[in-house]
Length: 76
Image (tube, rainbow, N blue to C red; front, top):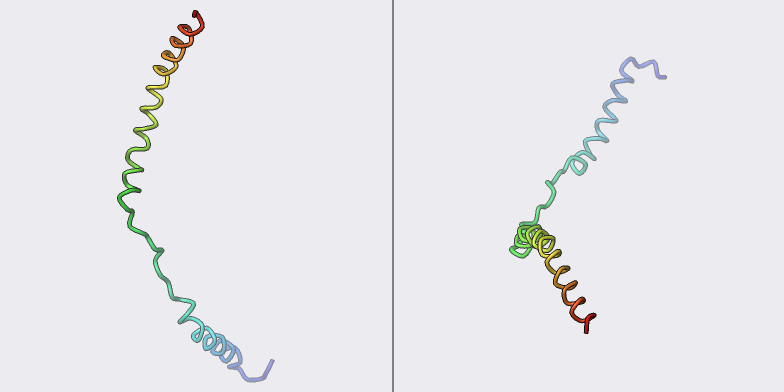
């Protein structure tokens, strides 16, 4: 180490000078891009759960109709 009592300050100044040259690029921040949702995306989000629920409700009805038709065709 040098006998200069300010060698610590010189080292800090050197680091700070390097940091200042990098900080302009390093400190740039841009918020994440949020695309505005389009109409198709909105409609899909709204009606997908409704369509799934409707399918679950109608499935037993379709199964019972299929069973009735199977019995009618098996008896003949």
